[in-house]
Amino acid sequence: MSNLNDPKINIPDIPLIVFKVGQMTCAVDGARVISIQRMEEFTLTPHSPDEIFGSINFRNKVIPILDLRTMFGLPTRMKEYSDFIKMLDQRKQDHIKWVNTLKETIKNNTPFPLATNPHQCAFGKWYDKYDNPNKKIMFHLERIRDPHNKLHHAALDVAQIQERDIPEEEKNAQIQEILCKAETDYMATVVGLLDSAKTIFKDIYQTMLIVVEDKEQIAIAVDEVVAVTNLEEITVEKQSLMCGSMVQRFLKGKTEDDIIYHLNHDAFFKKIMSEAEEKENF
Image 1 (cartoon, rainbow, N blue to C red):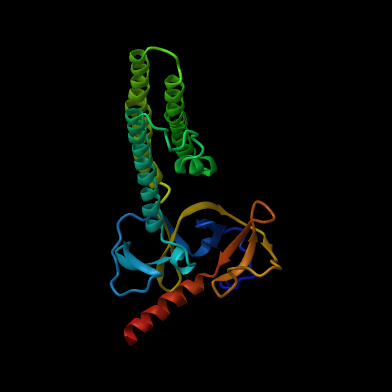
Image 2 (image 1 turned 45 degrees about the vertical axis):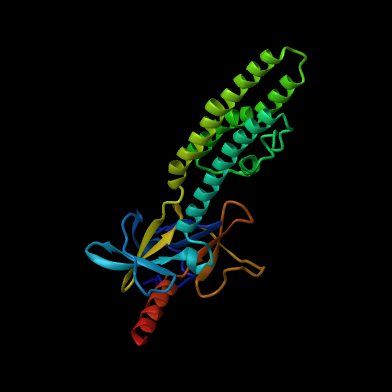
């Protein structure tokens, strides 16, 4: 009989569970997985190490949650989402300030000091580089492009009107019309879409739990489960950032540079047991 604990054994009829943790792609033996689910309700565990941030009630049994992000030295999913929300709120305030500054410069007849190029503001620089495989998110962000561009161009439109040789009353009327559109249409749309993006982006940061069973059960917290498949083992010549007891072998991804880390499930249980022993001794 084959030993499932032997890392050299391939089990073609029981595929691997492939998942993401930050930018890393990892896998665990499907033979050990008894459930894959979203992390909904969980209980914080006082005085636990950082890697074990709580527990869940799984089939009438309380089992610990092992956070792979913390184990790999990455920020937690919750902190990453919190930081992202803060960024969106700051970019929203940037554009509110932008419109208020435009109003002040028009009132005081002074040069406009902020970005008129939509690609040069902090949001524009982030927006141009951001990419996400989630089509819903990319579609939502695409809706921001047009009003965001028009908002920044409003300052250029105002400057052009200020240079025109037309009656002052007519000039002021045209400027106020542009300012009204910038504030009540373009800015309001950008701000509204940034606010609604928080709800859409929250789906990205939903933590998944892979419940693994040996003699005991633990829930492994990961970012996203991406596949259930068999993978080819490869030899990695260069020193890997992850090559300790946590990794039992390296697997071939979609490209030559795409390495999938096949994690050793025994290391999870040893981690839990060692933490439990430390807690008892303490």
